Image (tube, rainbow, N blue to C red):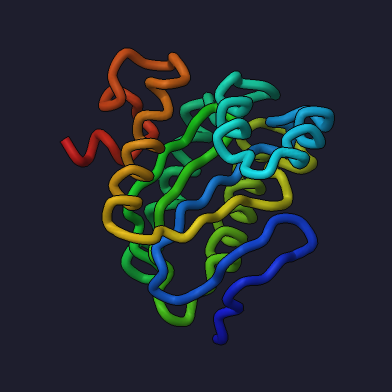
Length: 181
């Protein structure tokens, strides 16, 4: 398997390299209205603004259902140590943040695709629905150094607190934070 380095699938740019720690965000299909997506696309560095909009809880927020959030969390943990090292995660009501290090022979796109494909089918079954579950693309940013890694993990594990969903990050059930304490 050859890693692609910098590439695009016609949407966001992606960086695919073995043993490069990556911060990944993927979201539900209905998590942002089209007008918001178009406005955000015009901003030069829209990550913070996109996350802020996601934290408002737009859409059906299927990930707030414990069975669905649990399914996604189990899928993230399932291939830890085999296809990637899972360093941190947080499942929010309408999006997911993950920090992983893909292992040789496993592309970032393939890993994210496997998570989204499996969980979409299973979650739609649990919810008694069909149709798109996840937005077709995902955001990724490679981690530059140890400081960047520490700040990124803190950022994603504090996301439920910042969004006003809990009074303590450690109490959010769908995050790696509770395993660090």
